[in-house]
Structures are given as structure tokens and as C-alpha cells.
Length: 199
Image (cartoon, rainbow, N blue to C red; front, side, top):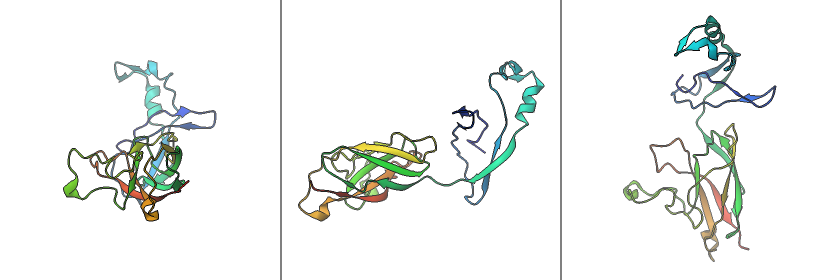
């Protein structure tokens, strides 16, 4: 399928290796995707190709030796949890994000209010979705330290918004933008709430 073409793994040790795919095909989530593997060596295969043509049948054998060894279902990326659920203003904090399909292109912003995006009529070209309604220090920032599986990441922020005497005014929401939404700059979605703890 598109994005699932064969590629070499990066060995971690004698029992572990990893690689990544960017699947672009639209599939039914209920349909299993078959994972196939073949034992190949990119160094030894160099003499088997000249000017883009296969000149040694051993490469043909290697290319036809893929065998199924597992399956999985393709799911949409999602955030499962963001910790902690509270902050102290003017103090650096590290959020720990867990989910599925996280990437370093994903962003989080912190907003005072109930909405992550303005109404369509207010989405003007000169208005940034990463700063709209964001509290001071809570503009949309990229995730960092994303692990190879895309299941864990971190985000560092320092919220400088003044503490409100109205306790309800210190309840913020977390808004998330998945990096794959290149065609939807107003794709922030609400993923949680955040309390401000007065020192």
C-alpha cells in the first residue's frame, strides 16, 4: 500500500531493530494490515545492481522472499493522556504526552475559555491558529522527545498568565493539533483541562 514500501530496519542490537512508515492509503479500520519481512543486506546487494538494472538473480530471490509474520489495524492518531493536569504560573513545567501516532510536528496550545478555534467567520488570514486565545506562554508549541513508536512525547512551557482572583478564570483547556493536518490550520481539538494552582 502507499507508504508501506519495503525498507531496511535500523538495528538496535541483535534482537531489536526499528523502522518507520508513513501510510497514506485510506483503509477500513477493521481490515488487518499484513506485515511482511525478508532477510536482506544492503551492502551485499550493491554489486547486484548496475545503472538501475538487476544483474544478479540473487536480488530477485531476495525481493521475492518476503513472508508474513504479523498483522495490525491502522488507527487514527490520538492523544490518550497529558500529565500533569495543573500548573503554577511563572514556573517551567514539562508535560508528558501519551498517545498513538504522535509526531514532532504536533502542537499543543493552552487556551483560556472553552474553544480551541474561533468561528469560521473569524478565521482571518492574519490570525494565527497557534496564538488565538492562547494564554501568555501557552502559544502552540511543537512536541519534543517523541519516541520511535510515537506513543510518548514531552512539551516544555512556562505560563506567565496572571493568576485571576476569580477561581473559575484559572481553568484552562489543552488544545492539540496533529502535524498531519496540513490542509486544516484550524484543526486544534480539545484534549483536556488544566488547573492553575496559586502559589
